[in-house]
Amino acid sequence: MNTARTYRTEITLLVALAASAGFFGYLGYGLLELPTPAVSFSGDQAMIYAEKQMSFGPRITGTLAHREMGNWLIQDLSGNGWDVLIQPFRVPAGVEARNIIAVNGSGPALILGAHYDTRMVADSDPDPNNRNKPTPGANDGASGVAVLLELARTLDVSSTNHTICLAFFDAEDNGRIPGWNWILGSRYFVDNLDTLQRCQEPRYTIIVDMVGDADQRILWEPNSDRALTETIWAVAEQLGYGAWFVLEPGTALIDDHTPFLEAGFTAIDIIDFTYPYWHTVEDTLDKLGVESFQRVGATLEVWLESGAAAP
Ligand SMILES: [Zn+2]
Image (cartoon, rainbow, N blue to C red; front, side):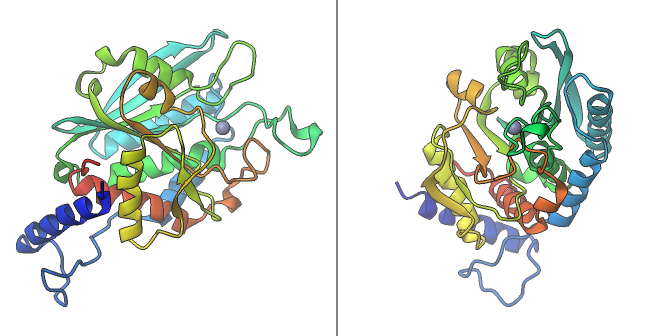
């Protein structure tokens, strides 16, 4: 199936509609040409969102810094006009955690997810003396959240024809630690979908994780739905990002998309797992790039605002 062609047909229709509504200000293009779709997402602003998260310090589930960061998240989302649901739960170690879900729009649900906690130990650090220290979580934590927050600020939700659910998952990143596990927040979310009203029947789920690396290379995560991956990578290609969104198989991962896949939903993980600072004390802001944020955010925005074209 040629998903690229399907997408172009839909985009052409969209452009015709948008141009007739005066949405595109470009006068030099005829209707048969494809103008660059209008993008509101700002990589600079996403970087500011990442910096803000880092200013709290490591966001380890159960700590005051993490709680305060979550409060800021709720405030920012509410301030941008989103309805915010809090989903509290307790991890096996007894620590209180909470998923934060922002909802906007109407129609079938689309879930965009990211984890907002950071790993309590940098146990992949090359220096054994660092392996009991927390990871700062610039790329692994802050970057995915930054993309979702910037989408919350800029997305034209009505043109997506969907209910957009931004899921900020807690307790994703403490696997292999007694009393914890990976993906506790997204598991709780999927196990309790029936309580999530407008988000309970997701048509698609898209996780963004580790998307801010300045040296970006986003491969197809092989557990992720192939057709949906192709659809979104085709949008990236159309925006000129084909060198960074590569349809080769990367590392198969357990991440917040896993509980959705296990429950039979269509889900993908947009993740750049070619990041040498993963779970080290070097996962810091200086490794991130504004353009990397821009590529991921613009791709998602354009796909979403085109009505979230089906594979
Ligand atoms: Zn991690």
